[in-house]
Each structure stands twice: as C-alpha cells, then as structure tokens.
Image 1: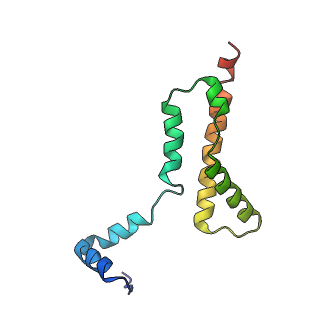
Image 2: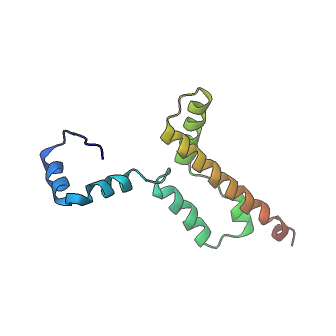
Length: 113
C-alpha cells in the first residue's frame, strides 16, 4: 500500500482522523462521482415523471446552462484540450442525447393518431 502525505487545514485534519481506517474507502468513493451533476439527471427524470405528452417529448430540450456546458466541452474536444474528467462528462451527455433521440423517435406513431 502506498503512503501519501498531505497538508490539510486543521479542521479537515480532525475530521479525517475521526474516519480512522475508513479513510481509504471514503477516498475511493469520492473519486467515483458521476460524470454529470445530479441536477442534470433530476431535470430529465422530473420531466419523464411528469408524464409528458408526445408533443412535450418532441419539444424537450436541455436547459440553457446544459447547452452552454455542452458547447464548451465540444469546443475543447475539437481543440484537443479536454481533460479525462471532461471527456467522461461529454461521453455522458452523448449517452443522454442518444436516449432522448430514441425516446423522441418512439413517439412518432402516437403523433399520427
């Protein structure tokens, strides 16, 4: 096992000492954060839970903040400046976009009725 020395504020040091032998587990969990903030998943889930009509599904769009972040990530990707974390974030946005496209494509038969 590797040994790491860190300088942290006294308040944080006291909290870390209280964790005892659970500190490695805590650090591992904190490094496994989802690529996107929870508010983005909540936005999508709240929309789906609202039982949207086919027309509302077609009109569904990301928030302005989400669109701006995606634009930034795509620009950084084109210039080769993405960090590993940003690439994971962009990949997650692409997965969500794919799911939304499939959802929208699936409602077309209902619009013809």
